[in-house]
Image (cartoon, rainbow, N blue to C red; front, side):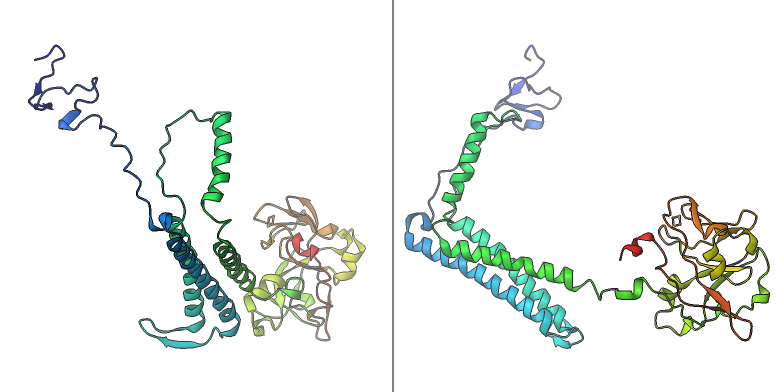
Length: 358
Ligand code: FES
C-alpha cells in the first residue's frame, strides 16, 4: 500500500475499495477510467477534389448556383400561386387526400425555396470554403487588442477564402435567393391582415329614429317608464338582424339614465337628452369595458375594470381613473307613440380614445 492509501494494481487500475489518485492526473480516475486523456491532436488535413482541381471547383460552383436558382424558381412559384390559386379550390392530393390546392402549393414551394438555400449553403461550405480544422486555446474573456485586430482580419480574409468575390454566379444567385425569399414573408404578413376596418370602427348601428330597446329583452322603452335614478341598459332596435350582431352590440351598447334635468351642468347634455333622461355610450373610453355601475346619489358612472369614473351631471366628464375623454352622448327624443328613439347616431367614435385619432 502506498503512503496515500492507494494501491495500483498491474496496469494502473484501482482495486475495489481503494482510493484513486487524482492528484497525479494522467494515471487514473475512479472506476478505472483515466482522469485525463492524451490530446490526440487534429487528423491530417485531406484536400478535397475542389481544392486540387479547378474543374471540380467549377462543378461545385455550378451545383451551388443550381440550388440557389431552384430556390428562386420556387419562390416565384409561391408568389404566383398566392395570387393565382383560389383558396377555396380543393384537389385530391396523393398521400394527403382532399386538400386546399393553395395551401399545398404555397407550403411546398416555400419549403423547397428554403431547403435549396440551406442545401446550397451547406454544399458551398463543404466543397469550396476552407475545411482546415482550427483549434484555439481558451483565453480571458476580453481579447487583447491584437486578437481583436486578428479577428477583424480573419473575417475579412474569410470573405476572400469563401471565394464569393471570385465566384459571381454564387454571389448573385445567393443574393437573389435570399432577397426573393423575404418577399413571401412580407406578402403573407401584409396579405393576411384581412380587410381594412374602414368606417366600421368609428360608426355604430345607431341611426336617426331607431328605438331604444332593453338589452337583452329587446322591448322598447316609453319615456314614462324612466323614473329619476333609474338606469336602463339599451341597444338599438333591429340590431339582432345585423350580420354581425355581437360586434355591433359591442359598439352600440348604451346606458339610459333618469336624472333631474336641473342637476345637469352642461347645456349640450340637456339639449341631447329628453326631459329628465340622458343616454351615453356604455363603452369605456379607456380600453372599452362596459361602464355599467351608476351611483344615483353622486350621479357617477363607474367602470369596473380600472375604476374610471364619469360625472353624469357634467356630460360624463372623467373625474377619476385612466380614461381620457368623456363618454359619447347619444341624442334622444320620443316618437309619436311616446317611445324613446335616437335623434341621430353618435357624433363621435365610441370606445377607447385611440379611435378618435383615426
Ligand atoms: Fe374602463 Fe379601464 S376600461 S377604466
